[in-house]
Image (cartoon, rainbow, N blue to C red; front, side, top):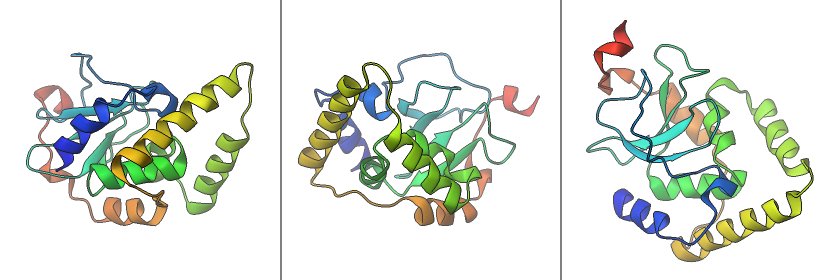
Length: 171
C-alpha cells in the first residue's frame, strides 16, 4: 500500500517544496544511501531525503550531513500514510528529519519557531503550504499525528544491520 500511496501522492497537483518533499529524481547518491533505496522526497537542504526500502513499508530518513555511523539512515514512520500524518502535524517534512537528535522540548520549540517565521513573500509560500496540506488531507483522509514519541520509539529499536550500503560507505 505504501508504494501505491506514494504514487498517488506524487500525482497530486501541489507544491511539494512547500512541505519539504521535493521530488528526488537526482541519480547522484550519497555514500550513506542504502544501495536498494526508492526515493520519497528531499527537503532541499544538506542532502536530507526520505526513502523506502524493498520489502519494507517504513519510511526512512537519510541525513548525510548531520548523521553519524549507525544513524545516517533511520526510520521515521511505519508506512507512507503515517509519514504524511506527521507532515500534516509538522506542516513540513524537515522537523521529522531532525527528531533523532532532539529532545522533546527542542522539537516543540522548532515547531513554534517554524510557525512564527515570516519573510518577504511568506504569505504566498504559506498559501502554497496550506493548499498542499489540504490536498493531502482530502486525498488520503488523514488527520495530523504528533510524530515525536512514535519516531523516537522506532529509532530506539532500529537495527541498522538490515541496511545494505555500497563499498563507499565502508571507506
